Image (cartoon, rainbow, N blue to C red; front, side):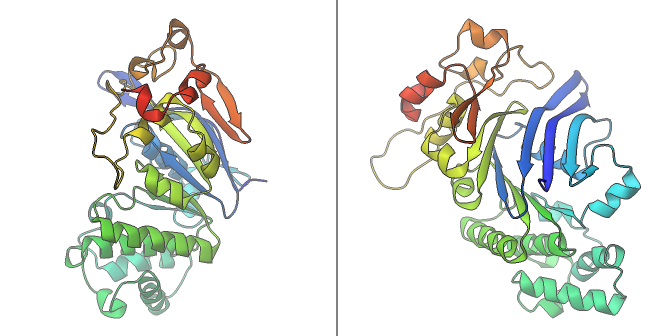
Length: 330
């Protein structure tokens, strides 16, 4: 049995212009020790999928489908039981640590809280364990940092504190939602390396959310590409990056800057992401796709096989894969 099974997940948000289908028909499995990358533009549903797994959706949001953590469906689990899962079996590193950490409490108090609540440690034991965790994630002079407040730490150090918090109860699954967004390039690399090392050493499963294909290509076993709230392509990392199939995935890849070689203008995907409260009837990418036909606008495309375990939701896969990624949008 898979550690995590997400089946036909739907998330609908209530907005001023009506219901917005933020996540639609998302399904995937995660085995113990496996890593999954979720990639796509801002607003594609990556973070909303993660928040649905954690039971942290905005007020008024509704869900459908199933999120099975072992034998437990997290979508139907009462809040008091879900509180025992969050941070304990399922933990999350959020995008911006400065807004995720409480500015009124010391770093030590915040790392100690899940140790007191979930693991039942005494205060002195929890403080010793908090010191060990901060030291494990590379906080210099960790013992003295226990009494610091978030504003007294650098951005990289705050993100390390968030990792320590996420690891405090030895979760089965770690979700890292854009964990390097606010950091400079050097610190980004250090944080990603740290997450990879800790996940491998502790035997956790990882869901890494990013808009950066380069980060995803080097960090995970499988990749899921999202657009307009749904999955447009998924597969093993090596297969997907060697055989980019969906026009959107190929457009993302072509827009990545590359070091060296001839200087030339970056490829861009024309148009804008569709409004989630007014999605098209057919393919969500139809309004921006150079291969669009009437059939694309008429109905959602089926997910078609590209290779073993690799599929893409496009009826024009032959045309999409025949051209170089940069040629599609030139």
